[in-house]
Image (cartoon, rainbow, N blue to C red; front, side, top):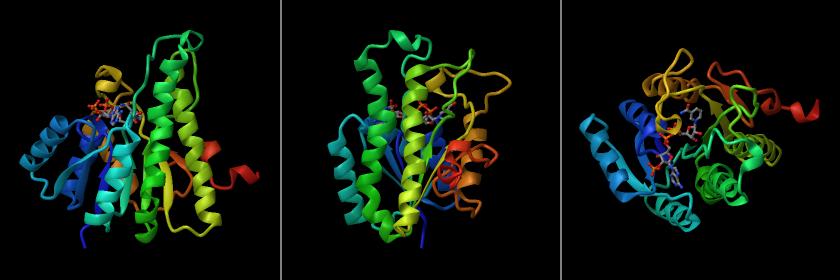
Length: 243
Ligand SMILES: NC(=O)c1ccc[n+]([C@@H]2O[C@H](COP(=O)([O-])OP(=O)(O)OC[C@H]3O[C@@H](n4cnc5c(N)ncnc54)[C@H](OP(=O)(O)O)[C@@H]3O)[C@@H](O)[C@H]2O)c1
């Protein structure tokens, strides 16, 4: 049976590259994108690149209804979905000091990076439960320092990272056969960072490979948020809540 993955925000950047690399490994790709044009263009590009099975699925994190509709459609037509990759995300204004945000700006980033991912997990839980599925969230470290302090981005992803740990504990305690984890792949040159380059930045191909290798290495990362070397963040380490 072919492995099947749904990737959100897969029309460009890291999501597109994950679709490309997994597609070349023989995975069947459900390519989540909010825009039909950008989604179909990405599907066409992947087909041209040699990916055999790829289909656009409308998922707009600003419209929770599209998430529920996609889950129903996938339940009906792709009930063998094995992996959900919650990849879509936004950084908000990365330069503005934290005390200058309007609530509405902050709410927009939290809506996308945290609440929409929660809605994805809730909507796809029944399908993934049936298939012993996995949920991978693409994320960042929550720490800030004087060089890296994008307030809306880190606070929203902090909530995501804590959710990963919390749900991992719930799944384990309640014997729900779903693995949830996060990967912090490090800096990758994409539109999100205005295609920044530098000594600590990876190309999207390099970053995509880091993520694919961690996804397919056979290890179980239940409830953990791991870095590019597979090392869990301390707050995301298994059983850290009990120590
Ligand atoms: N780049 C990095 O250095 C880096 C490092 C660690 C983690 N990450 C994480 O990796 C993920 C992907 O980032 P990226 O660098 O590939 O960024 P990107 O190139 O800007 O791609 C972001 C993707 O998310 C989609 N998206 C944004 N808002 C959406 C919404 N409301 N509904 C549905 N899709 C939406 C975008 O779709 P549109 O084209 O329609 O806007 C696009 O497909 C993010 O979660 C980011 O936080 C990135």
